[in-house]
Image (cartoon, rainbow, N blue to C red; front, side, top):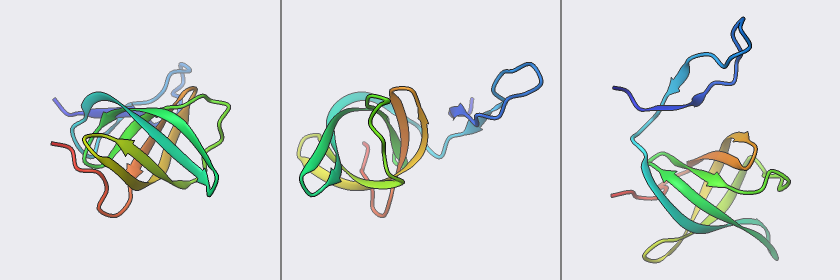
Length: 106
């Protein structure tokens, strides 16, 4: 069975989302603390979940606006900062992909 990401957001004739979009890699379910860096003196706490080699799902209040790309500090076994690109946003959740070397998932 293929691993599937969120639906593509396009509704069919019945008002439902169309078929799911294939995922770039398998997700690993976990919850880690993170911080989204929004400026030199401004960062926002978030939960990092469902990490894959390609990206992650973040939980952050919907009222927090996110730029297209931003640094994400991940508190794992060590502290890492990766640049991520926003791919989708639904309520308190956001999907991001890792830019460059990204974040290694075992």
